[in-house]
Amino acid sequence: MFAIEYSQLSVALRYPQLHAGLNAYLRTLAADCHVLVFTGELRPIDDLVPWVGPVSKEAESPIPSGKLHFVASATANEYQKLAQSKPWIKRIFQPIYVRPLSEAETLTVLRNSIPELVRTHGIQYSEEALQFAVSAADRYLTDCALPGKALKLLDSTGARLKLRSGGMPQEVIVQKKLVGELACKEHEAINQHEFEKARFFSAEKAKQKLALRLLFEKHKIDPDARATVQASDVEESIARWSDYPFTPPKS
Image 1 (cartoon, rainbow, N blue to C red):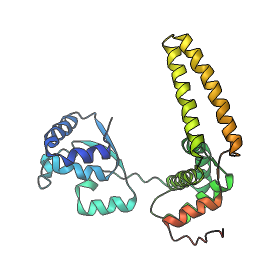
Image 2: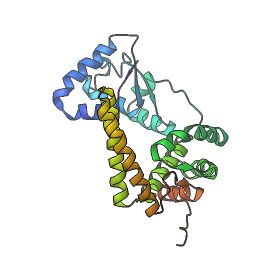
Image 3: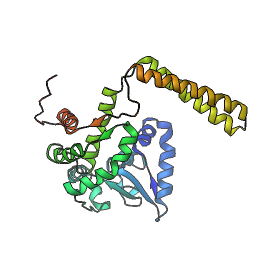
Image 4: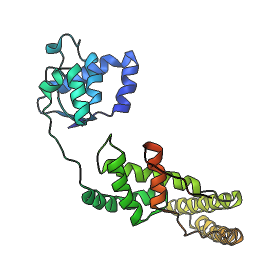
């Protein structure tokens, strides 16, 4: 199985000097009946057709002729719209309809996915935020399916809350960076078996960590505290994407 990334493909199609290589590559894949190409979305396949043979000569092109085998995904509307303009789509693709997850199933997926979002954004998510994301996404985000749209909603909300709550004093930011640099130097010295240097960097790191703790106390910052996404934060996010009747809280 081969995967074609649409972002890389779009770059290749932009430069004529790469078209010959792309054409030869696809025809080589088409010559092997055991090759399966995964594109993620259905759209990239239509973009490929002009570079593997004239569209008017479908029998000569490995894509419309079915010589090149693909797996792709699309909504039912996207598939029907593309098939209307490109009749060969229905000839080489057999639709397999996958039902969206229920709200209960989506909630289970979210609970299992939250640790990754916590690591990414450095914040927590309340159970109420998860439940609201599922119900609101299912009702107001009608252009995609669960669980994807609920995950996208929580990811966007987490990123926005991190930006909003991430303002630390400049001297704290500088001190945290210094501690991190000393930790890297200590680790590098250990890897190089330069243990005298490692001891020096370790002692210096301890001093700077003490200075950092004093800065936290000075500015009344809890270094272990994490912002938590609440249902109201998710509500604000979905109001940006849909016609959700959101009323901002009074300050």
